[in-house]
Length: 275
Length: 353
Image (cartoon, rainbow over all chains, first blue to last red; front, top):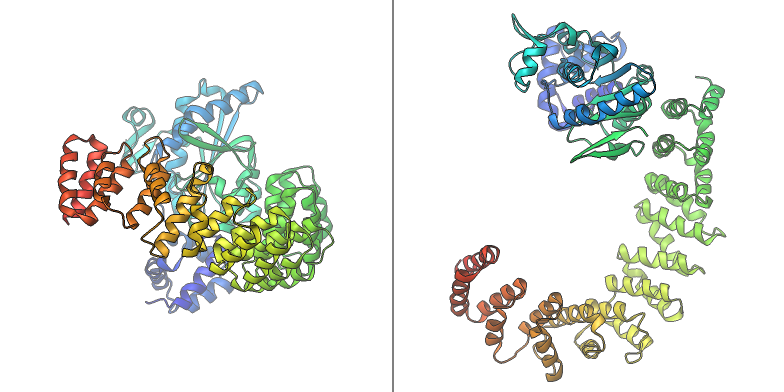
């Protein structure tokens, strides 16, 4: 089925309004394939009818299905290592020391746009490796995504060889089991991570996310336009405790989205925090 | 959502609540709260809340509240004044009529900011307002208008800018006029400026700008003026003078200059202690003149310590005597260090085609 440019504009406009995610005209082929597939599955003949259904009859379920099809979920363990290095060797230590000084024992991390879970599990591994006296700490990693299918994969936590290609051997031996179907992080890692459904553009849901020490939102905001991106990052600011850190993808810059965060340098890496 | 609730949230000591309140006003397009939002910017301490308010005002339909935004111009806080420029700028043409209507504000600083806002709209309908500001009594407003009209190359204002230069004594206004004339002046403008300032006893405050103007827009008849500065008393302006000379010589296809000044340039060109940039410019000028034994000059300069001068000399030598240049380059390649060798090789390749 061919999507006309009018249909493309109407459909992507609807998606943008509901999710903040912007699809440009160069994505038309990609969208054409995915939407056509969905229309076949549910027996709708035209994009116009589908849009009408989404707007007036859908209770959110079909929109969720559409989002599951449209969002790309490329990720693997220990992706963008230099960012994780700053987190592990500097930021985490700093936050932990401050908490000890204030007699606090909880560290909360939000992995926003977690996809199939490689990032939150990676963070869990790093924390277990880097924090002394881990038993004295309560670590919470909240992993959210708009796509229910990937969240389910995250909960199941079975990964193929491609996902673990960058896991150092000693970490694999310590934190993974080889299971039927692939590789699974051990229980002590899985227990730290909770998966939740969340639309980053849902203001009310975003407002419930508070008191985090770290927010990771890497390579997600590239799908958003300027206004939506700012709205999301503003919410991340609110969600962080004072002194908390935000990490975006290597091609994204916090400073270009908002001036609210302050900057710190660790070697050649720049990190942003809530001052 | 209740209007009073939102108003109270705007004053909440918790920054997060204030952010939510601003967000909700924007998302709900709660027009009755726009005045409160606009006023709130004055007292808000949080950078993020301020940012959010400004970004919101840029996307909301606030035409009926332009008057309140214009009050930002009177703030002692530079950030707020700049917010007004940003907000009006984002409105484009929609803001021009309003801004034009308040151009007679009693405060000259505000009048200047109005011009900044008009330009920020990027609307061609701002141009008449900018032209009108050329007649403002306040020098800071007048020179702002002169600068902006120059930047947008408004040739229709050229005569007005010339008139301003003639009538005013304000040095900063005159400087702005000169800079604008460098962009959109012509040979007649240069004549008039030199007549007003006098060629002989020109105030040294204006010298660099006038020299630049003559270089950019002058004709062959203005060479004498530039050459009159080419001596050891004006070495501070050598860069402007040499660049100006080069531009006129190139533009007017001049092939001869008087002996005294030609000799002066040759001496400075050969002076190894001189600034490389000036020496290079003199080299370019000399290359355009009919001078005997230029080839031997180029050969001499091909061994200059400064690589740019050496390579440029070889290029010019090649224009007159390609074979000689190639032989010389090949010889130098054998003795050169790595960096210089690479550049010489590239030149050789380009000459051999």
